[in-house]
Length: 171
Image 1 (cartoon, one colour):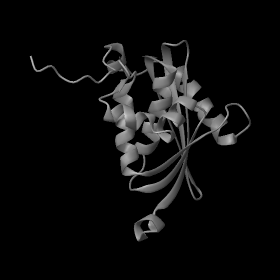
Image 2 (image 1 turned 120 degrees about the vertical axis):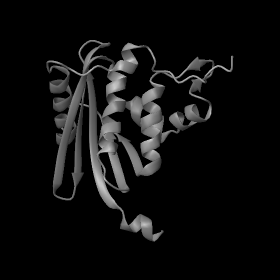
Image 3 (image 1 turned 180 degrees about the vertical axis):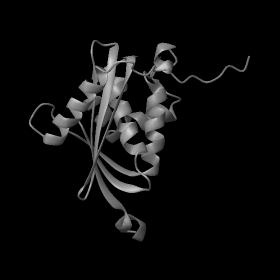
Image 4 (image 1 turned 60 degrees about the horizontal axis):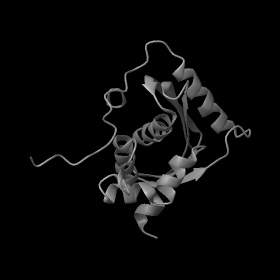
């Protein structure tokens, strides 16, 4: 092991995303734990999807880190966890955000997430929802409360239909 690896602070992150209707108002909840320090983050958008909120929760959690860390990120989203841990998202990026002949949905967020993962030592672990895992339940509460707030932010990329990343035309 390198000295850099052994010197990294350990952080646990629990994330969850929620959507009232799909699409509809949505929210994300994040819990960061480092030693005895706990931080909660949440936010939402007036029109979005559950998958976007799951990805956004991971982005917000990783963005909150002030330096490179050893991160264990728990999520009840199999799409989120498998896309990273199985290497799917890295493959999509390598292939210009395509899955076969189709454009990858939410590529705008996947790109942000991969850039953050490239800066951290992150392991994604799936947990089953609503099984009494205190931090996962709390992240769920935060995401649902955020989705129900008044005056939610605008997910301009989603509302404009620009969630796919396509190469610019040469003509």
